[in-house]
Amino acid sequence: MPTISQKGKKMPASPIRKLVPYAEAAKKRGVKVYHLNIGQPDIETPEVALNAVRNFEQKVVEYSHSAGILSYRQKLVEYYEKFNIHITADDIIIGAGASEAILFAMNSCMDPGDEIIIPEPFYANYNGFAVNAGVNVVPIPSSIESGFALPPIAEFEKAITPKTKAIIICNPNNPTGYLYSEEELKVLREIVLKYDLFLFSDEVYREFCYDGQKHFSVMHLDGLENNVVLIDSVSKRYSACGVRIGAMISKNKELMATAIKFAQARLSPPTFGQVAAEAAIDTPDEYFDKVIDEYIARRNVVVEKINKIEGAYCPNPSGAFYVVAKLPIDDSDIFCQWLLEDFNYQGQTVMLAPATGFYATKGKGLDEVRISYVLKVEDLKSSIKCLEEALKVYPGRTM
Image (cartoon, rainbow, N blue to C red; front, side):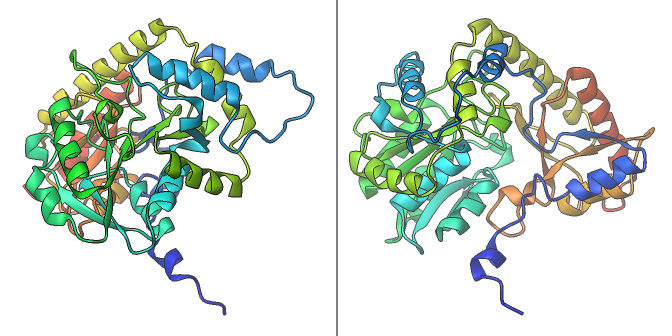
């Protein structure tokens, strides 16, 4: 039998999706499953985006430019101007989601064996992207006790080696919901300039900031024009995950000239997704006002109710729509599978993402889970009640 590649063997399974077969089996048994494992909002996609696809008039669905439809990129320039981010259409390459944009960036900036530093816990698929590109992840720890704030500069410097080529952050953060401050990002600026590194910033949750806090983009850091790569996506912004449209943005001309070759190799991003994404930019501000109010209400329910559970702790996040909660459990992978296989409360259970998959350091996240507060308030109340009842009878409870 032919052998599977070493890269294939190293590719991690998604902690967000690997429990899907157990959830499907639970549903077949008649158990209602509350999905808090995945960042799939139940918010309606803006009508303006849906109508653009419904009213598509071209007679042929053609390839787009490999960098993306020009009118879309030009409209994105206007979108970023609202945030005081000054770019041109040539600074943008559209990808099939932020996922492809990150792969373009990694493959353009790093060689196999190079290292990328990531504060952990981090978006689980960064591990997969790194394996795909042959890049080694070097994690540095942040802690739930500090709400997952940026680690001290000394931790970054300890991790830097001659093979270090980049740092990646997600702001606001997935999975923790932490919003990096301007001061924290200026610390990163010092490190990036001192060691001449690339700084990838995944800012797909830019609009989702709470409690009066404001998002500060790495594009506002002076002197990093050739170092910064902004990663973005429409998936969460417009509750349009299935359109699979993201972007890689940089003012580094050599980098973009390199990345376009990877973009050409896959021909072009999806046309209908770009049509929807371009129209979505016209979404009225009231849409976001309502969405943010809704997410704040959802966050407050989750944080308040988890912190009332004996032995559990959950920081109060300032952005995105995720929390990492610490639970009195022995192993989050076992616990999350047990919830689906062996537990139900009044015919209901909850699907969570084990936090182990959001760490690169083995053994971390065993007593933590990621919760996506993407369901309506009443469903969140029911799901956290399920969690509370599950913890009372879980065989691996630690306290």
